[in-house]
Image (cartoon, rainbow, N blue to C red; front, side, top):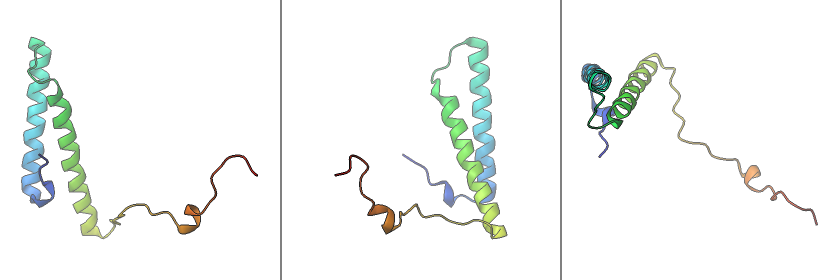
Length: 90
């Protein structure tokens, strides 16, 4: 289940970053010392979570400055869609 990180306040995001960083640190220490980690993907998942949170912080920072341009997705112009397929010419 995905959590909705966008609803968190700035202070809550910072707490979550600290918590995830601590989890990564503990997991790395456990792996280095005992060479046994219950869930090896834990480090990867927590690092991705930290990256998502930091991205959210940066987006909010840019929104405040008015420099963030939201891109809803790439739409191809109709001229490109009407191009003939590549292949042998008849």
